[in-house]
Image (tube, rainbow, N blue to C red):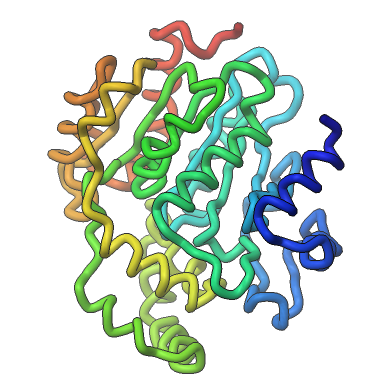
Length: 323
């Protein structure tokens, strides 16, 4: 089947007409600037974006998403990596991690539909199942054609990667889960956002920006200052819908982990309340080939020491030096 035929089948199967896709793809590849009338997207400035080797528009049945490639053709001998960030991450949050990882592995940093970079039609869903299907589609169009690859997924992205595992074809050769959740810690106060119209959500976003800017300035050195950038570029409607999705999430079904047969490194953080190490250890215990490492803090999980630990583990499993 040709690419055009596959695209036509995708359009017919999803109910998305060709004119909508033509409108969305008109300005691609992304120049990181879009008109405000296009689904409420905003500029997405980020110091890492100029360093990427490629940017790809990944078209799912009901969404258009962004994938960034870090690491050139010289890294083709090692397993490529699908990097799935957490709910509130931007590439800025991983500005230390991605260049170090890309020095050895071609790394696809992918953004599921709740991220500001996606394009959705009004009424499209942001359920956990939808976002997990995004991970599978992003893998299919980036790393899967190589036949062998690894997955690194963080926080809620780790939950999505585990949900997506049955859909991955071929399955990954190895998986690293950074600060994974069993149940995402979303405050109950998030429900007050549900009845708010878009105009009120936009006002709330601007009210919160000064506090987020303060956090950014105080904590950017340790890799935790990305919240300001997330909020500054966010689509309030997506933030609300995805918050409510994770609040309603019943928790990871630990029984499904028995089907994940590849080697898995699970990194927890014993000093982090939002990413309890007990949850990471429980996941590692349930994985047939799981190994647990305590990274102590979230900053450690976003830094060079984490990359060195990951590289050592990948090498020890024989899963990264080549095919």
